[in-house]
Amino acid sequence: MLSGLDDALLPYVHFFVNQRVDGYRLLLLASEDMEALHISKVGHQELILEAVQLLRHLHYELMSETLQSLFLQLSCKARNLYNELRMSNAAEVSTRTLSAVVDLLKTVKNLVAWMDRSPFEGCRDPFRQRVLQISVELALTAQRDKFADQPLAVIKSGVGLFTLSLPSSQHT
Image (cartoon, rainbow, N blue to C red; front, top):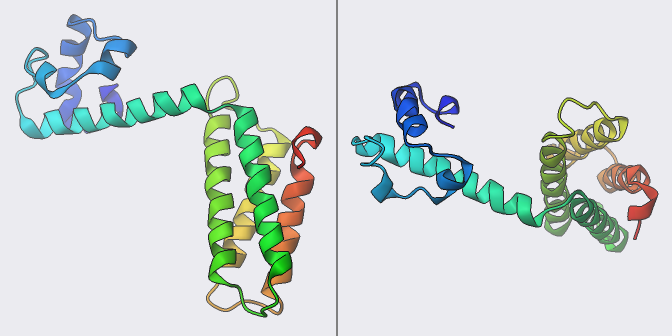
């Protein structure tokens, strides 16, 4: 756990090993446990407890998230953006459209992060690569200071590719 943190925390690794702090105990670690682990510097305690808090968040997200739920979220966000684009009559990109793009990209980020975990890590699935490619194109199109002609059409084509890229069981 400490090896991914600040180098100043490396001397504490053996205290964790000696006290048999496993994954379960790590998630339960609190500030009062720091003294028992011989970690007396407040700054070091804060760094460790902050990392533990991040691990807790990741652990609980893993318990509630599934690949299926993420695909469903992605499908819903893509459909939402598509509908927003269909309803938009403006030549300019609206704040609602940009918000829908951000929601979609957040979901893609969660999906790709999930796919980068075991047992999928290291797998260069063509679907994953395509989703990343479309996401980058969508982000670049939505973040330009000046859009090319008909920016809504460019964004809409990216969303259409998203919908086509999803596995057939995920279409809504």
